[in-house]
Image 1 (cartoon, each protein chain N blue to C red):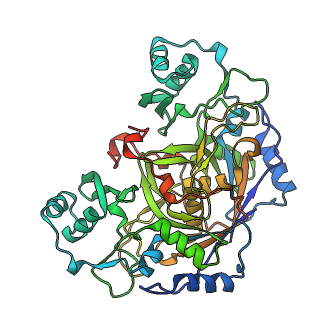
Image 2: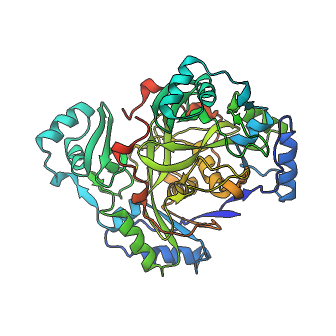
Length: 248
Length: 248
């Protein structure tokens, strides 16, 4: 049995908060400390970004000509579009109300992952960027928590061809984000055709089931009982280079 | 706490097996019967297809000219490619070793979801098609199990831009496959920008964590403790028409 435990008593996270300490207190109060073998802690991008001070006051952002032009196309705030461009390496799609980019980390996502919701009371004109290096953030959290828990930093992405968002991993440490089954055999002894499992994405999605959205938002989850395979790779292993994409 | 229970004692499923009865026995032996409120039973496409007799002997398949030509491009068995074409409405990508189609149900996936692995001992040259109507299959399973459990039929898909497969829902009954959050507010009272949650896909992915692949394959999972929102829509609600796709 695999158990997904929401950590619902975390306080609102602010810049320079000691996030590992707060997470540890929450795990303790939930009876989930010390860690068991295979425990995976999933933390939303939002609280990691907040703790890392990635909130930007839009009043301080001066949009350049490219942002002003793109903002007119997508009908968004030119200052937000300026941040989206700074955080991206390519624009994938730009039509009214839709701005999909390739983030500098490689993820293809809406608005370079920049979020204007749930960023704290009173912050009317602020935007929250992704962590500078989410794999490094996951590794730092893992170390600060004693190095036994695996850590996944989650976000929610839309997908081509399907409605609705699902959880994805943008940072990971202490588990293999991508599990390679090449050369494995199925129960009939045939070579497996499905070869690689996006384990960190699956973990992030499972955690999302216990996180909710909006008012009920729970920003961290512990998964216990998962048979975690050996190996370790960051969420960057999940990014497929644009030129290798199989779907176009 | 949300619990993911693998149902690991199911026998090998064959055509015309009473799948609901076998699932109920497995739930009983796992101490998971009767159902609790919010229980979701996830069953792999493979065992549903097998029970519905969707196994095709490749010897009976006569590839047409289009299949022969496409098979040369993708370097696959022309009889398999013939089945892939019969099950699809469009070819999305065809290069050596890769054949991605839009299935007649709308899903964009490799080989129209046709599987040559894990289809039972001795079946050397057989292929397993998706169920004829997976939403109807899910509804029938739900009804045969008393109408209390929600049912999701899962498969594993690759994704654009990301390595590795994740679980997806191709059939669902008894829960809203897509949860609409439009008009909701976040904790700061802002209008939520993330508006629709692909709940059935998330459930299928969470179940996949307990299913494994290859030798350890577990074909059914019960998720207990999920806060299932009101409403009901099949997995067809997750399919975004090609012409509405936001990512191209």
